[in-house]
Length: 280
Image (cartoon, one colour):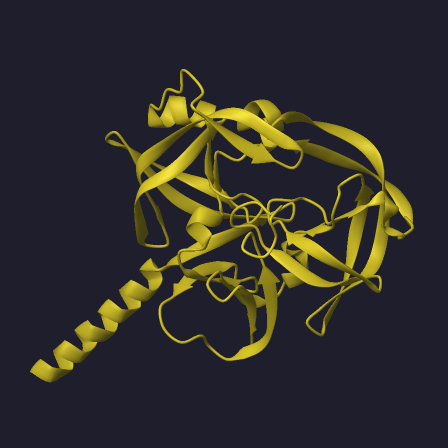
C-alpha cells in the first residue's frame, strides 16, 4: 500500500510538472500570443505577450509599464533598431519574467510606446529573441500549446536550418534568416512571427494577383491602412520543404515570412543549432 501511494504521488507530481511547463498559445490575426508574468518592484502582472522572432529583445508598452507595473521612464537611455533605423527608448532590467513555469531574473527590457503606434492592435509585452533563445521551445499549432523541452527531441519529421548575426554582418541580434527559394529565385528570408503578412519586395519579380487593404506600422510609425498588391500561392522552398504562401508586395529590402507556413504543425526553435525542427 505504501509503495502504491508513492507511485500515485509520483505520477501526480509528474503530471503537475508537465502541466506547469505548458502555456496556452493564442492565435489571432496570424500572431502568436502566450501568457507571461512580469514582476518588478514588488508588482506582479500577468499579460498576453506577442511571440516575436523579429524582435531581438523583450519590449514592454510604456502605458502598461506605467499603469500596471509602476515603471516610469522619464528619459531615454538607449536606442533600439527597427527595419529602417533606430529610435530612442528606455531600457531597464525587470526583476523577472516567467514563461511556462520558467523564471528569468533580471530580464533586460525596452520600454516603447507601442499603444501610440499600434493603437488597439498593440501588444502590452513582446517576447523577443533574448528569451526565445534560452530554451528549446516547442510550438504545438494543432493543440495551441507552448512547452519547453528539457531532454531529447521527439521524432523529427524534417529540419530547416537558419543563419543569424553570426553569419550576416547586417543582421540584427537573434534574428532568424532562412535560406531558400521563392518562386524559384534564391534568397534569404527573415522569419518574423511578429509580422501580420508575408512580404516580398516589389522588384522581386512576382506579380500581384489581387489588391487588398493592409495595415502597416512599426515601433517608429503609427499604423496606416493602404491598398497593396497580394501575390497568392507563391512557392517557397526551404531545405526540400515546399510551401505555398500569399505575399504582400511592398518596398521591403528582403523577403520576410510569419509563422503561417507552420500552421497545423508542431515545431521546435533551436537557437543553438540554428534549426527549426518539425516534429512528427
